[in-house]
Length: 219
Ligand SMILES: CC(C)(COP(=O)(O)OP(=O)(O)OC[C@H]1O[C@@H](n2cnc3c(N)ncnc32)[C@H](O)[C@@H]1OP(=O)(O)O)[C@@H](O)C(=O)NCCC(=O)NCCS
Image (cartoon, rainbow, N blue to C red; front, top):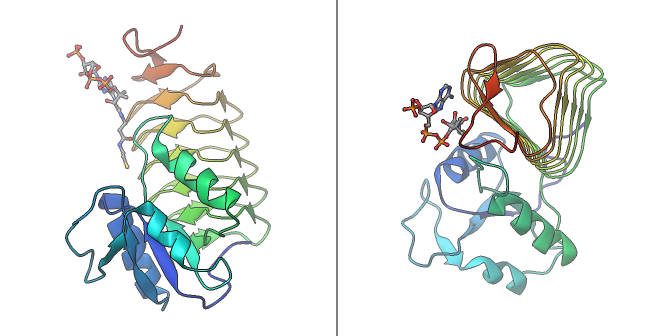
């Protein structure tokens, strides 16, 4: 299971809303944050932490001296969250797995590196979370769900049992995915949708029950 397993100082990558929530969680876990990096220079301080420079400022710290935390959120598939993760993994930096103290994670859960489970989220037994996933505030991942790398389960979304979420998919805030449904990679489920059937890769669905969104879907 994941969690903050060592005490190396952390650099947060990104400076937007997700970075703020992540930094707050890291402080709650008692972690020391060296600073943040962001592609834009001269960002204002983030909860009192200051900018170290643009993303490549990370490279002036040895890979064994720091851990990274991916503060880049994603509101759509194909975000830079994945690119940043892969860029620094290629350079042998490790991304911290972060679990908010108020999240419930069943002991039988598998969580890969760099995944973040935010406040109030619930992960039930048999679930498996790939690398660099976000299970956001108050989301529920019930038994035996499989979430592939870089997917984002937005605040308040519910995955019923044995749901499968493909790589880089985005499950919108408050959406519900019924049991045993598969959401294809790089798909987008709109906020508040109720998904009753499988969704192919690259599709966008919205509504109750969820239907393809003509503008955004590949269907
Ligand atoms: C589904 C979604 C991706 C569509 O985004 P978009 O392509 O920019 O769509 P638009 O805002 O231009 O809206 C297009 C139409 O879809 C409707 N629509 C948008 N989102 C919808 C949703 N979640 N459910 C139902 N209808 C929706 C709009 O009302 C609009 O309808 P209209 O053409 O009749 O006026 C987006 O609205 C959404 O739900 N994103 C998820 C947000 C989220 O999870 N945020 C959490 C971040 S942590």
